[in-house]
Image 1: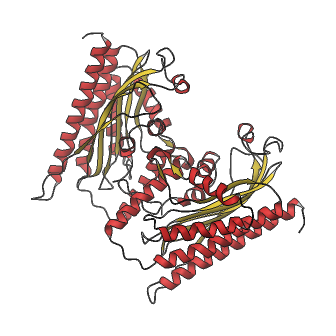
Image 2: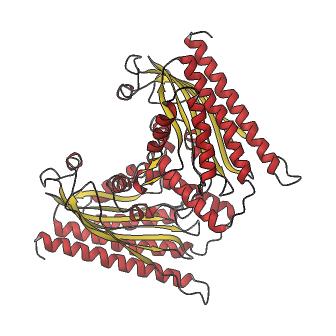
Image 3: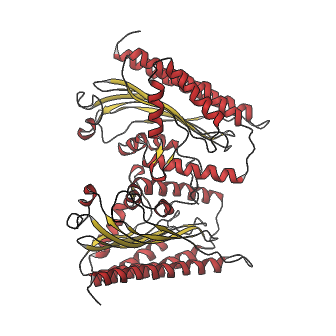
Length: 287
Length: 287
């Protein structure tokens, strides 16, 4: 594999796109399995956007939003993007290698959320990305956000992530799962957003190995999440469960709008609003 | 009227409480007028909270949340509070007179929001407060947030506010209505939260006159808003109007969690979460 940065960028972009295609296909398969007879299978709808950002100069790129409204996933959004530009004078100092690159950056990634209809099917969030300034690194993670956490799912989920991490470095799981725990906290309510997962950033050991790890995060998602969904797809629920689901989604909304760095960064720097806010729930309640 | 600060604080607290009582009574009257026959009239429920705040020392006070879930108001919250404490070293420099008071502050106020059931009855927000550091001042405002703005309501609403302002100073209406326009902007969507109103802060000309103005803001609310509610209480709507209402409420949520200074200040300084977030809609959608 070439060390050439242009080649590396293209390789990462191709991966994010192919992962997006596989995840969308898998979600559509789940929808088809669960669809009422004779109903046309539910499919993702795709929307394209071009980067327009007053904050940066020499902007370029854009992204693709894929949204599904189905019988299993009340809303699922799978976004990919490739953007480049120049951070403001102020912001570049906060980003690794931003000062040394005169603010120039390139970034590509995949980001997805689900808000399942059945309150017993847990929502999930996954995101992986490659960023280039004067430095280059990977970041991302997966976290599970059940309305009604159960030990079996939580254990299965964390075991899969631990196995994945352990294949790469013994420090990864303890470090990245703690980072997820710390990050996904709704501070003003003194609660966690969900049951955690892994969250990593500034992964810049060896491009090839870091890329391999990032790929396996995506593959791990495809192995573990659909299984958890199928395990609960027929769980019986009533209005009181739904009420709790809507309230929990309200808390999720609070986290994303108040604390989530990606969301706030996207909104503050003129990112595409539909893409940035596609994580918000289809229906939420604050009774 | 005494110039004594203790007396002034008590006078303001008494006013906010009596205004709360009058507003709650008026909302309950509207609910009774509109209630289906034989249904028990809907009443406000009250919840008390005590200030517990790790950020400040020498804390005291608390507040009362009054919430109604009715047939006209899907949710209405009317909150009053009296709090005192000491701002952190960092925060005191951002507040007028905060440095000179060694961070000590006292504050009391009333804050209300409505989320009406009928999409043609406009939501409203009103807040007035008195704050004391080494300085003392009043602040507050009213703004209307219709899902479907109509010129008659908007004109009636702004005319009433202009008349109120003009009785006090010719600069007030132009200045305070512009401040509301500027403030209630959902920057990332490049839209206004509603049709504006008035917003004022640091009003510290003459305590008696400023208090009189603040009282009249409350009285103006009681004159104008119930009239607008009654004008639309029987407007016919369908699911498509409701859908737009829920989406607009999503935008309202975005404003409050991302931009609203009171909300963010409350959450960041350990304010009572139920009181601070009582402004959020009973049901919102991000399709």
